[in-house]
Image (cartoon, rainbow, N blue to C red; front, side, top):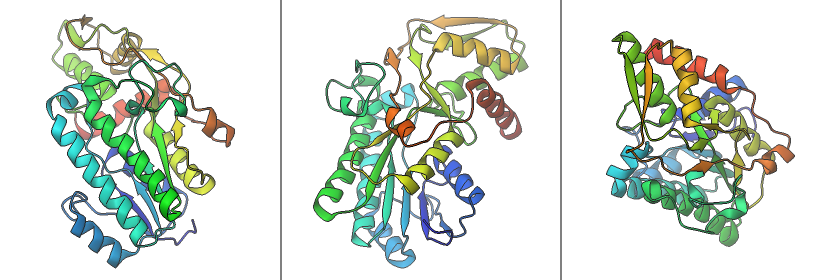
Length: 309
């Protein structure tokens, strides 16, 4: 990519897309193309076709997606598979049709089987059953990987895919019905602190192990791959460390400053018991994350207070 390359960041208002825009701006790129969902419905093939025809992007970061936590994935199963299939199919097809030089598709760690060997390597894909709570979303993301592979195989397109671990940071969704675990915990503990509640209830047993990465580190990894990686195999992007949800909850409790009791509701679903990415491939290319978990959580809470508190 050159500094004046026409770069389309699809999903620039989302947590990942906005972080990619920040990284590109920090690196001095001057021709970043963005559209809100109101301006460009990526589920609409005609609108996507017209955008690519008129704007002629040279590079594409496909970060647009319909995302949410366990509750949202269980409730809106049809929307999660339909919206994501349409978005990725339209953008990837238009990128081929209009001669985009390179495209990076953003997937998710939920593509891996529920009981995949840990840490999860790229070659674990499609070796077992998916986690039921987010299966429609996972299938859509797997389809995105396969679209990139198919257009590469048939048309020679330089389309690559990256699979991030669980993310958090600026631009996160703090809706308790739709959010992921870190923003949900930040909001729960903050509201409990403000209301001086003696306790707060957390979904699940607290036993599952998860890996978390600050979203600005992911953006750094994506730009790194766009500059340095051209192969067919998709690439995991993670930190290589994991933590139980229980331990995470107590860390966030301390960051927020909540003094009450934490109760874990084991009657609620835990999801996949363990999810740790094997990020050996991207490490071998020379990339590593920079932000430690505690530092990222402090930053995330500061942003939450500035935007929502």
